[in-house]
Image (cartoon, rainbow, N blue to C red; front, side):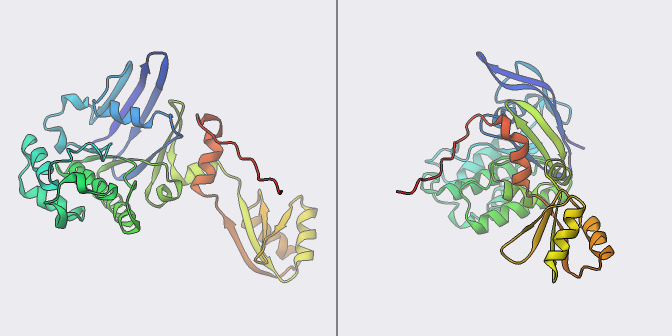
Length: 309
């Protein structure tokens, strides 16, 4: 098993501590979402793992070894950190051929990843003519070139159209199903919720959470029940008698915070109140994330309602 292991990792730039004593592991066979507000230290941590910067203290290893010590690293770790990094005057195919030659990867593999990334038809075009989404696809093709066990992607959905977003989502899932280690940094909470199995959340360079996504949502959100009845007055009175407040919604349903469907169902049954619909409602990943990181956001806009003239 090849994992990413970060131990007491710290990185300082002058008086700024970008990463502060981080310890976590990214295991294989699952997609790990790497989340945090701007300035939380995600990109710095990924650079440290990839040997693009040196830590002030602590370690970051892949399969128990520093990235710099890996033989033919592109065969071990594939990464996309900056889709703009490729030389604009090269064609997409030549860019990948150069990477393949430097890592003793057969040239036929270039054609395979061009097809996999959906850019084989434009492989002869210069990269400077590519859209952001096409550059993203090229960067992902480069990350997959060595058929690596570990894949690290920073904002892979950036610039992709809806078809591309569906493609990258399924790609990450399929890599995890194959037993690979997949770490994905993203600001898109709703998108992350569609592919991540596990979450590592940072705030101001420190670890805030390292947990399965479902447990994360449950730990940082209040349970809520959605219910529909033919006798709302009786239901509301029965709920109030037990200390529950029911709030009506526009679609004729009621929501009860801080409760579970099993509890509300038993209460209604005891009073003979007819129930047409009863279900637990889960908070979104975005809601749970905002609840956790509210105090760790470096840049936050203040909302001021518009005043009527």
